[in-house]
Amino acid sequence: MKTNYYKTILKKIENKDLTVGIIGLGYVGLKLLLQFANKNYRTFGFDNDKKKIQNLKKNKSPISYISNQNISKIRNKTFYSNNFKNIYSCDVLIICLPTPLNIKNEPDLSDIKDCIFNLKKILRKGQTIILESTTYPGTTNEIIVDKLKNFKIGKNFFVGYSPERENPGSKNFTFWNTPKIISGHTKKCQKIVENLYKKIVKKVIISKNLMDAETAKIFENVYRSVNIALVNEMRFILKKMQIDINEIIDLAKTKPFGFSEFRPGPGVGGHCIPIDPLYLSWIAKKKGYNTKFIKLASQVNLETTKKILKEIKKIVSKQKNKKILIIGLSYKKNIEDTRESAGVKFFTKLLDDKINVRFLDGLVKELKYKNILHKSIDLNYKSFSKYGTIVICSDHDFYNYSKILSSSNLIIDLRNRYKFRHEKIIRI
Ligand code: SAJ
Image 1 (cartoon, rainbow, N blue to C red):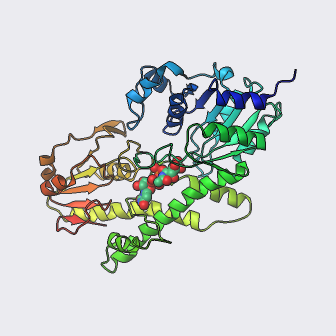
Image 2: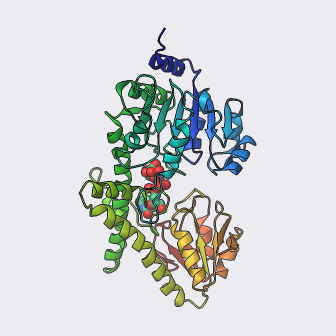
Image 3: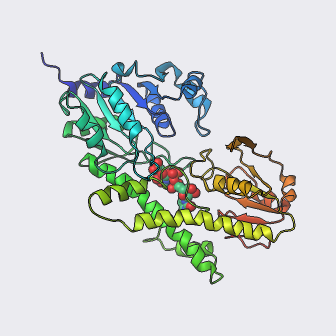
């Protein structure tokens, strides 16, 4: 009797004898694995980082806001591996691999392409592959569907796309309460993805096809990049008129419609907002359209970091005490991720300029630069007076900012942490 793979997998989803494999255990993949494991699905976590796999097997989390306890809680239904030996036993494989840019600032999908190349040899009928990585419209078709010609997609194999919406360090938006867009290559693929994600997220939003789902995600990030660039530029415009951008945003955000709050910062970090939008401008150019906003926003955000650094150096040059302390090296508060972080750019450039600079970050304990390991100073609220200037780059919520203010000589507040004017506080 012919196997009905579609019905089989739907049944497995319902009676939870489904095995879910997550490929790529970063802040997206590991979070996703926890969702399925906590709903009693058998899960496999695949990652090529041997150290990470070893630690996970010892119930040690690689991410500060995912506790070791979270990991140990799922140990009896989760298996970790840095090879693909157990792919065969996974009914669903969800790919959460990075999508960086290459040195020419073009999309680099090599992680996903290599993954599919290796998976192809060992996939079996009845499996489903879902891509979660942020990428340009058309990717899932191009590098997954078109590579699986030996299967009948929608009949004996299924493919979907569901963009991640992780907001690292956020407490209000949980996985469960953040609506999840889903899509499938065929209606049956879509149904499988829909039923699967409905088990772990409160609201599933159905996209009519893969490309729309890919586009929605990248548009979300273009939207952020452009609006962050706007406020970053506004702050320099208004400074010419001695107007404080943050006070203007406080006024403007009282409008209950048609205005969403963004804040100027030291520049845009992370591996999403500085990078994902360029995936869209790249594909647009390939399709014959030269985007303006996207590239301009990227340039403005990058220039912001350079301008801020120049301002910091100018301010410090006027201080008797030239010592600088940077608070927060991560790219935003309450996380340890330093990718594309403005704080790291400031710290390393000041070091290069032979300026006496240290950093304090309870989540970024050390930073290796030019083969020297720089360590965060210990937190001692009385020690801030040792520095001529304190630069708040990432304002982790766990610091006591009134104590910092009382013991500092001068603070450059790049995160609008102090909502009031004070002679010791400079906002650039
Ligand atoms: N930033 C500002 N001003 C703002 C907002 C952000 O300067 O008003 C800076 C942040 O400090 C940070 C950078 O921009 O350096 C990016 O911040 P972010 O929170 O937008 O970006 P990510 O990369 O941590 O996460 C975002 C997610 N964030 C939100 O939606 C709030 C979400 O778009 C995606 O899940 C994720 O990118 C991704 O992976 O695409």
